[in-house]
Length: 71
Image (cartoon, rainbow, N blue to C red; front, side, top):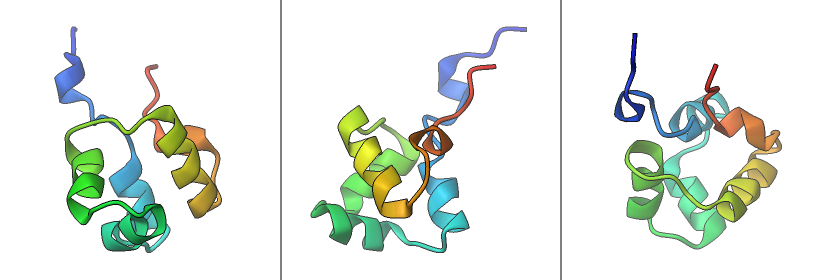
């Protein structure tokens, strides 16, 4: 069965923020980005690898926790 990439969530950012009891607003403030940008990262687009590394550091997690497995 083929699943298109559009059916797979782009990343786990939204879930990880919820797990860590952090908001998109908190993350936006930490990264000096707009809340709209963070919302788009959670729902539509993939942030850069550098940004993902910054987010992982802020949340004190391994960057792999922000990614969906391909297996």
